[in-house]
Image: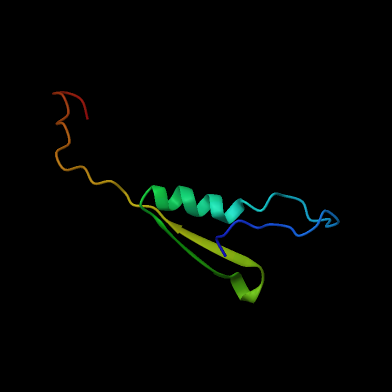
Length: 68
């Protein structure tokens, strides 16, 4: 599903270059995330769930006095 799409001929009317999900996968995985694909709501269409990690602050700098 995440491999780049290639066309066999030039007579197709579908537009695009077929890089959508492969590009999404590359960006998400590069940032430590993950993807899940499946049927859309009520069985119609297609859905893609993307999880990206949230960085934790180990030692945040304390606010200056008088500033929140």
